[in-house]
Length: 520
Image 1 (spheres, rainbow, N blue to C red):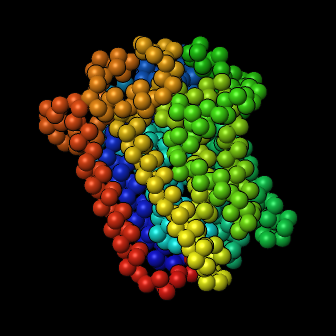
Image 2 (cartoon, rainbow, N blue to C red):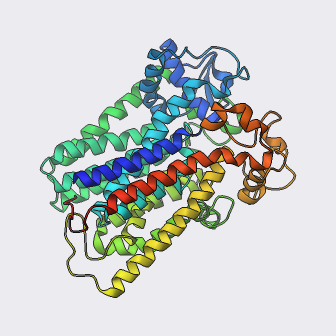
Image 3 (cartoon, one colour):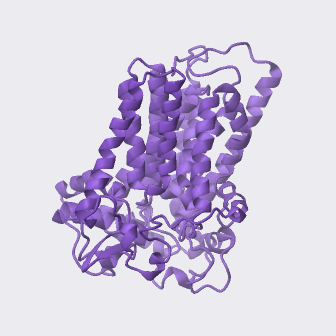
């Protein structure tokens, strides 16, 4: 891998992380369930969230004690940044009921940025490197990484303490390290790292277990094809054993059995109706009728919220010709996540932007997008096989132009959803709304941006926009602006993004094209 590729990937990382740092979202039950476990572990050295249980309804109850009902992976990943916060002087989280100014507890911001934010930015940077490996020049590779981080729902979930972005990044690292094992002289070390990442992803979110298994199957296939030594299988298994053991120990300490979990002990009846010991994920038969809504419709349609992923369809066939194994694994990961979502009764994802539960497939879909903007006939560290014909050059420019336009469209859309908090209700059952939210952008997001009254379901004290670095630094100035003009607080963010992306692309173009890096 060349230094030039690393510098471009670092530029993508900085742009993405700087964009995520601009937002500070309030807590919800999903966020609090994970954060309360982190606070209990660090502040009191215990796994129960007793005294913090009123901050979330996503909780398990065993006897008189309360626990997070989530897998412990994200909470454990959040322990190091929270320890750093404590060492830097932030106070421990108070014990007591919610509603006492804790919606924006300072540690929440730093933990979220250091976990979801850093991992999403890292995923964008890794996609940039993998796009070069698939044949993209650095400029188009940067487009792939930036589009993932700013023009898909990953933008929203990078600023929330959910587990989706952690699993997405870890699974992509697992695939990348398997490929690295195949082309380097140290397959055992890389295969072990692949196993660690695949297992941690399942410890963060159990529903991505099929994708974690797919990584192991892919590695085994490479071994059977004699492209990796058998020791790679042992390395993958050894790596996966560590996180799995941590999960089993946590379950034993928390619920007295290594095979017990929070979903077996839901405290609220509405969650007990979905999750149980017999069916912890709450899965039912696959409902193919949801596929159209999960892909195309404005309520939860993947292509509506991430239009650049439309290019993944032709990209699959291009990648199938160029690197068929990566194409098949990427498509398999996307299908595994998609089928699990089709089987889940709460498939809408509740309060969310777009199809929240499909978030782990986004980086794999972007690998397929990378194939469509990669020059034909060039792969990884190879130089072009032949001088491109005029038709091929025009075709590449056309696909790149379409990708740029779709990325800009998705980026504007995601910024608008991000600005109003990113967590929008599904159809209004349980909310004080007059009409169903079948078109969230038209019915919720756009009215808030243009200055319409804040809807009742957001709460009496809610603003139309979530706190930003601008509104936190100059609260009086922002509140004094007429409602229809408060979107001006996002101008510094857009200016930062535009200037940084422009500087990155200028730096890429300033290098002579003849300096072809030897990237792998």
